Image (cartoon, rainbow, N blue to C red; front, side, top):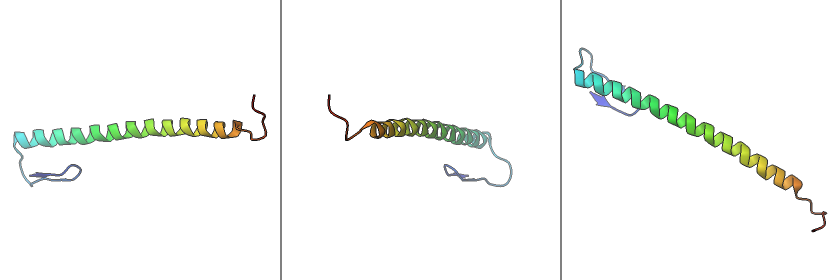
Length: 69
């Protein structure tokens, strides 16, 4: 049996206990990797929204005709 990170091929027929454990661990690892990537994506999107708001408000508040205090 050969394992790839996302695609795996199984031999037809019965699998040994070690192969079943390896398959289950591989599936769990793939699921946890997907959850981690989604979590990081959500954090990055929230950060981009905050930084865009800050930069936009900074540019809007910057008035070239305003006298320096």
